[in-house]
Image (tube, rainbow over all chains, first blue to last red; front, side, top):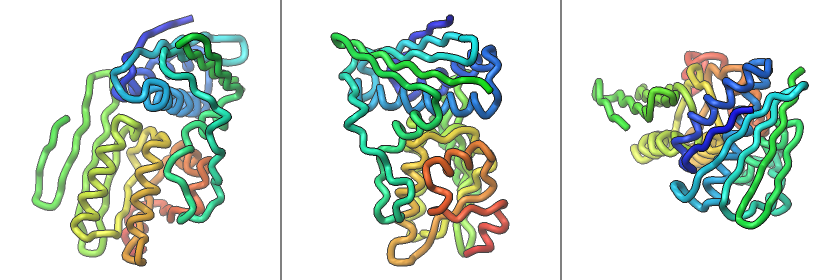
Length: 135
Length: 134
């Protein structure tokens, strides 16, 4: 298990991606699986900064990577506002261009690319667990 | 962030934060019928505002026919997709142009496919074919 704490800034995204990539390689995920995990984590971290913290430089994000028998688990923790996934509308990916919304894709991509996504909230503490299985 | 100006019609935008981060580079070449925007590296929430600024600059000059050379794109998040869809809408307005994509790596294409973007954007195998479409 490896844990690192990153500033809640968009500049941290590339560093978090690097951290996740290295751990995923150790967990023997394929190139495609690593790319999908990197995408999901990027979306999750961006959501934390934008929605939980409401902007950059408000709080930190703790990232824990744990190699498990059949894949890798990434836990992201923050101290921002709780995020209610049921409030996120599912984007219509077949909609005509004029009806396409510019927002709402991040959460959709995260759920589509991961094998399991779990949100937990307690007092001023949010925990998001992402699991990616290797083939 | 560094801005480097080469030939009059070529602008290179280099976004480099630290050694560990992979930068995004934008290089725009103005042709008679269209503009080719070559994007290299990561397009995420940190870098996509710079891509948005570049597209806005092109549109502000009254140019709405854009080829995005994706050959060097290593990563794109929904923030990058938002910039592309927003610019696509702007370019196609009044039938004044289009934003087309060229040379897309397989993993980037899979993100577009998942987001339902492959049916919206015109995607070409290479830049020459994309430029020739205008």
